[in-house]
Length: 257
Image (tube, rainbow, N blue to C red; front, side, top):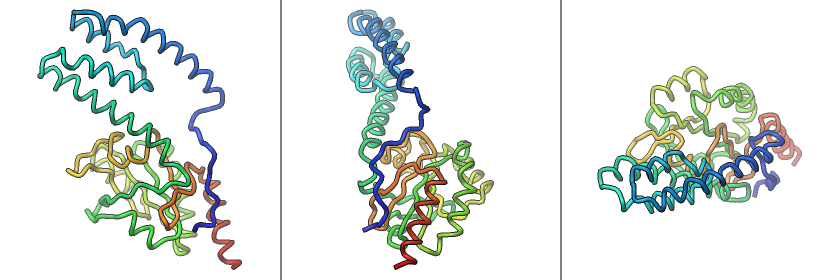
């Protein structure tokens, strides 16, 4: 087993005091739902019902209620309208619900979801095989347009150069929406480690809705998972300064043995 202590604490990308903002936002959302939901549910005027729904009373984190309302509206509209307007929203909401659920379960102490994704040369890269060959693997979700992702690369390059031969590997997973953006980002940043694209089985690029981003509960980037050789997540979203300390401690301990 890894000698690195599993991080059981929670991390948040939000600043201090955000809880109060969230509380007020939830109160506003409650009022919007209270005001608009009766119109959506009780009117016989489908245009009015749909217009009320389009005002989005649910916000971005009341997806269970939004999904229930979409399914309630679905039988009342034509098949063409459902295909064009309702079905895509149902799929989007279902995906967001999956992300939220996975964010709560893909955490330190749990096994990392397996994946096999292609690199720029079209070669399939399996997390299982990378883990077999290394002691620690950093899986880092990124995109070419993500400033904080790119800003972290210089420090990661230094760590990679220092610890690669010790058994440390990095796998960056791009959630870019086009192959050209991914290729340009890879080349511009001169990434020395394994870099793959998060594509669906049919090759489609779906950005935030990509399959592994969903499986890992990714709702912001960069999002980083430090995984040991047995596939267990040991750290989540470590700042690069803290990651350097973890790696230095790990191989200092091994050198002392």
